[in-house]
Image (cartoon, rainbow, N blue to C red):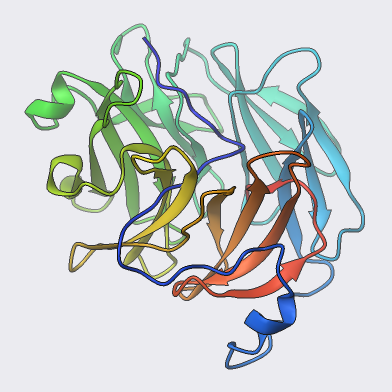
Length: 319
């Protein structure tokens, strides 16, 4: 049984926090709340997903370039390197790396890798990929590192070196910090329809090879389904995409040092999700109306739930 992984449309929510202004309202109102103007270089690169394809696009919406199309076979996980020169994707139990400039594509894993979902993430030096995996030697799910140069697999977290809850349930990668020191992963039980999901979120320290639990679903009643999570550049905040008991995808924010959880977006008519941090205070957000005409937009939001800037980019921002 597999957990439904919504790579393209995700989110979450919570009680007692500031309601986020709708993306479809006048952007000038929320822009006034920003202390300083947000300036993004026109040639800044984004990885987006749109209508079954993955593209690189400039921040001003120009120079949209196709990297991979899902027309022939679905890519289950994708990642763009920090230099925007390498594009990795997982498909049919194999990991492929594409040179963005030349479009040359290579298969990098030497042994079969399976995955129940989650994310695939580049290391800061672009020599390794982190992902959820299962190999011939590691039949159950685990978090592993894949060496891009030789295809060798290193298991970081599996049923043998995690706690009792993880050892009996699914494990999947959520994110890898910008500085490469922390890997965020979760263990979960697939919930019955309309039931609260049982999950635990962990931070794996690369240097010490130790694991710390940062959120237990049993300790809160805000998040009923967890879809994805993204760690801030300073490694203190975690954006969480998922659903509350009301099944509309929204965004939550976890302060990891204190364990404080709050809901950033609150709405009954549109889905909100976020995978990419801009800095420690702001991130890129995707919003889509829940009913016809299903209008969607991307914008920059701060950690108080205020919309700062609407972007011209169409599609879901992944990097």
